[in-house]
Every structure is written in C-alpha cells, then in structure tokens.
Amino acid sequence: MSDDQLTDFERTSFTHGDMTREVYRMGTGPAVLIMAEIPGITPKVADFARKVSDIGCTAVMPDLFGTAGWDPNSSSRSKPKSIARTYSVMAGACVSREFTVLATGKSSPVVQWLRALGAAEHERCGGPGIGAVGMCFTGGYALAMASDDRLLAPVLSQPSMPIGLTAKQRASIDITDADLDKVRQRCADGDLEVVGLRFKCDRFVPQERFDMLRRELGDAFVAVELEEEDANPDAALPPHSVLTEHLIDEPGTPTRAALDLVLEHFRSRLLGNDSP
Image (cartoon, rainbow, N blue to C red; front, side, top):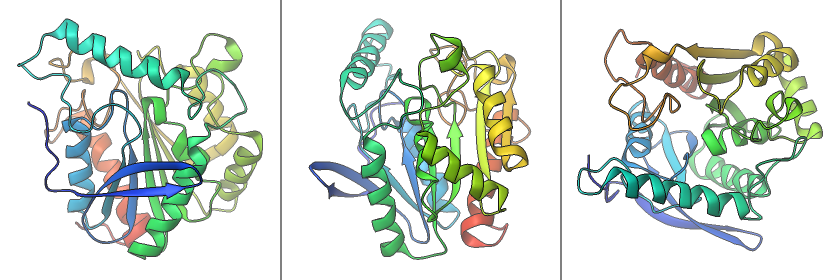
C-alpha cells in the first residue's frame, strides 16, 4: 500500500476545553468513533472506517497522534525507518499528558475529550446512541467512554494499556474505578455488551486483562481470542492488530469472522437490524 490521502473523508476539527483535534468523517447514520492504534490513522485503519460507513453508520476518526494517512508498510520506505517512526510516535504519546500508560484505576485525560466528541456526534448523526472502537494504545478508551449511556456498542481491539509490567497492570485496563462501576452496572442491567479482541500470543494484551474483564462484566463481555497462525503472515510485526494490520480479509478466516462480528455488533446495537 501507499500513503492514504483520505480525500473521501470530510475533514473538520472539534474543540472541547483547551483541546482541539482534527476529525475525519465518512457516511451517514449513527456515529461510530474509531480511535486509531499507534502510529495513527494508517491506510488500514481508514479502510476499517470505510467498512463501518458501508454498513450504514457514520465513521468518525479523531486524529490523536501521528500523521493521518501515513502507511508504515509502504514499499517506498525502508522497514527500519518505518519501525523507528512508529516507535517515535509511541514515545511521544507515552510522555504526553493526554495519555496514561502505566497507572491502574485511571483513564487517560483524552477520554473526556472523546466523550464530548461522542456526544456531539450523537446529536449530529442521531440514532439510539453511538459506537466506539479503541485499538491497542486506545483500546481501553472505548470501555472508559461506556460510562456514558450514549455509548451502546464498545469494541476493545487489542487493548494494551496499562503496559503490563506488574501483575496488577496486567490484570487491569485504563479506566477509573468509578467508570468501571458504571460500566459494570450497565452490563448487569442488560444495557451494554462489550466486545474484546486479541491474539492469544500478544504480549501487549495479557490473558489476565481479558480474565479481569470476564470477571467484571460477566456474560456481557464477548471475548474473541485468536491463535497466532490466524494472523496475516505478511504483516511487518508479530500478531497484534486484529482489525487492521493482521486482518486476512477473506471469507472463512478467523480474523474476517472477528471483523464481521464487530460490524454486526454495530448493526444490531445502532441500526436495529442484521443486514448491511
């Protein structure tokens, strides 16, 4: 692939408090916030957004870090340089005050901005509520946002924070205790279903994290855990990105089944039907 100019997306900005970010939007219907993984809105993240738009939802991509449209796998740049740039984006995010990477029982400050964006998109797009997908660095944001009743369809794709250096960090996710209590109650009341995706071999998303989510959310947590051999072998890095870099977008493959489950989650919760 090559860099994606994202010309088929509407490009706007959104301000809440003292934070302003660019937002890329496509489609009509209920909004689904798509929070990109490191290194940002890559072509494969944008392709996932297009799939969300295709089912009848408005795909909303906030530009949180990196360079929107940049392709880390482009043949026009060397693999070492792409990896170095990816880690540079990660390092910048890790030291930013907007993001929390180590603390347990704490949500990143950017979550407040994302909740405000979700509220604005719900008002603009209509529908019963919104959906949200967090990926890797942003994986837990979709859970933290679910303390807001407007979020009806959260997806945690390879949620990797906090970094699992200790047992406590591995068995937690970046959400405050108060927000987790609200999410737990919504799940117990039958108002919420949370989808989680991971590769079993992924050291950034430890088994303890999904075990904790099962304990806290019960049957409302739908866990999709894939084998190492299910990942796209052409990806540059070890199995990690279920919906993007390691997706094998072919019917009958486990990663395609995971993608279809996510899209069905949005259809059933936001559109009230199971047809595209």
